[in-house]
Image (cartoon, rainbow, N blue to C red; front, top):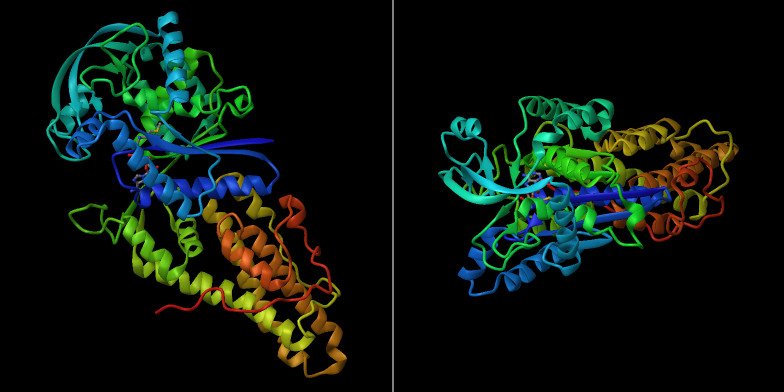
Length: 499
Ligand code: ME8
């Protein structure tokens, strides 16, 4: 089966921060999981470059918009590489391959009449590069709900997308295919907004010089940055070698860009008569130390802070925390250092690290480092529920299953007391069985955690004496596959305890 997953393409004007890292890490975990399942995976991230503010920032830095974008897009790519993100491609909207496709798509829409020339006047949020409907502008007292700056009254000749035609089709989509928009609460929210009525939306603008993609057949207008950006999901795989990946299995986004992904994007695809993505999955926001992240409060989890966490606790601990404690549901999550340390010490050092360390140490001590043959299977771990949760993108529940397995295995150590069995020669077979069951538990746990903690699980497997995971997942998670006679390697703590 193929599995195509995307993240938003990030505004190239910003420096990468924990929000970008979060979405991209979650997508990476799901991509790794599906690769492990044997799926043909395509994982896409990238940068959104044609915003008007790019032109301004570039000018302030005495650079062309292209130079400024090159520099900042590189920062995103470097960050993602450093953080172990294994994306299959990185799309930049200023790349020719993307621009050519967008011209083609908008050309098609001009032909069908879904895009038409007209005039628009309204309240414009310059920071977000979007118009707010009259009632919303009023509700926010004519200030940007994002940065508090006054909205600007703007009037322009414009090309419009006939969104008003698609309300019924979108409502039907949400009703017939509820899995199109998850979690459920987001679907209800969007359905209500669609029922309030849809207006045609402007999709072009002037005044950014050459920066942007020209509306075909018009020398003045460039395509509005959001329309340009949404097309990335299609343009990147709209080639003979990749077209089998379309439609996407999931667009992973946060709640800030829900409207564009749950309304504008499917409507554009309906107009183009292209298949719709199977799912838009909407997560919530990270806040930090109990408050909304902001530069002025100094609680922004920026690259420098992220680097510090990685240096202090290891990349995989950060990935675990993001997956385990992140805002995948409809509530925001707090990125708090105290919480991070607690999760590190409890889940990773005391539970997981301890299980692996004591298991391998006992095999060294009692069986000269060779995994004995197991006996009667009085103990086993079962990861069926883990797989169901992973398939449903419920990482928190999936990790809770693994953690429960770790806790059970640790309890099994206490209950079977191998140190007592080791003193009684007639209990040798029983001790063999216990040690085998523990080693096999460790192996299964490394498989289940591999998508989240690729480096640590690889180290744990080296210590256990088994090689890389060969896959597919269903086989790897079958109890009893660890061969007796496996020789344990050098044992060392995987998660040094922190204070
Ligand atoms: O909106 N918590 O780009 P963007 C969690 N270019 N995730 C967060 C977050 C937070 N506090 N802050 C940001 C854009 N994100 C457009 C997208 S897509 C066709 C165009 C993540 O750079 C989250 O994924 O503002 C959010 O949706 C995205 O960054 C917005 O990134």
